[in-house]
Image (cartoon, rainbow, N blue to C red; front, side, top):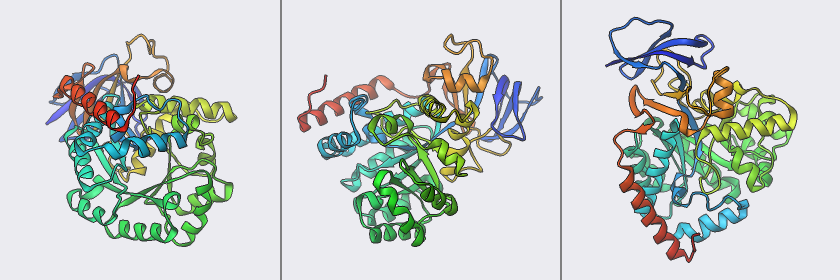
Length: 411
């Protein structure tokens, strides 16, 4: 079980390896066995000439169940989003609808090079919805973390028995939706079950962080979602506790959260990660997220360089998911989760600087191949082993049924 990616432009994001204008990556038993120029090995050869070889992207926060309503919320504010998706549409979701949204959404992410994705699941009106979401994630060929925000926290224990190791996290309702005592009980349950936690905190909710810190509810297993409006003192609390923060730049800028806090987080010593959030309001690929975060921060203060954004979308995302020792860079011993970018495609050609090109001009259409654990799940621009026409038809039927039940007229 050996595969050799030969003659590619390797952007490893591992300081010990560096970048190789012409290099090889040897995969053995699903892991990276060697990285360097002109590796000689008895292996299946994949010609990576004219390709940029990257570590797979890591999306640390996506509400995947909402995939069927892509684009519907482009003009929504945050309050309008909550009213439409959670108030109007979500009550009409059945397990089959959840399954199809999660499956097509995970495949979309994989198609654009997202090899690891945290599914922040809050369509949890019934336990069967959670089971359907997990079924879809497990059917899709990629690494998925099911971050369960359960209507009944007791169901988290049931689901944990199904999802061992780092395949699950706890989505806290947190100070935006419940009391501090309830948040403390949820954190205690997460720690008892060995789960990392993720919690939405932005705007006025940032004022809850000092009490959360005082009650020891924040640590290096905590990911803050968004964090817009953090004061310097609150940033210092997050840094002291060792929390990570996930930025969703497109949604934050468009829905009125405030400017993404990318630069202020980095200045405070906090390495944020990047995430999509929701596809009704934003594109589902990490190229768009990187580009928006980059443009906004450069416009605000001129800080950041392209490599910063690529690291946030890979190395820092892996760390936020508790997988920093297994993903995020092309390093010997890590999982062979890799993306090959077609450097000859006209929207990126000629590639004078691979990192800058990926960040400023990349898009899903240039993703030629994707490998997860050394196994090809996309080659020559096509997902493998997926019957997309049938899945598309089923998703459209699901969307139409939900919309009709909710009294929503689609354009």
